[in-house]
Image 1 (tube, rainbow, N blue to C red):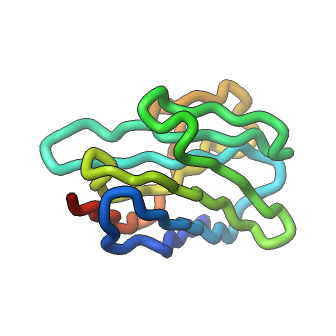
Image 2 (image 1 turned 60 degrees about the vertical axis):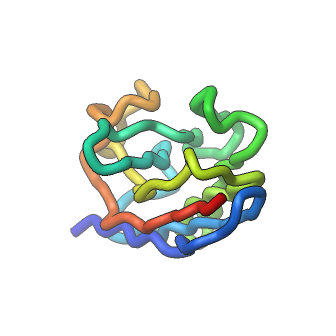
Length: 126
């Protein structure tokens, strides 16, 4: 059974930082790319960042480039999202996601992913 468990969300002021973690079990973690998404009630889920299974390649949404960094530790089956210079527009529930094992057409489109965590709330106040 594949499980993704996020942690690290919270409330910060504008300009603050947070580091999200997602621990994955029951999945060939080191063989697959991983992604982070976010969603605000009433809006579509938005891709934030994706990382290649080896960690060498990453892809970011334009809205977070330069402020957010995705990384992974394959020895710990964990993917991270370091978020700096946060602003109120970053307020959302953040989800980590994994594709069907072996899939290689990585992207920031949510339809590429079939496994999702329960989400962690990030709130940025002005």
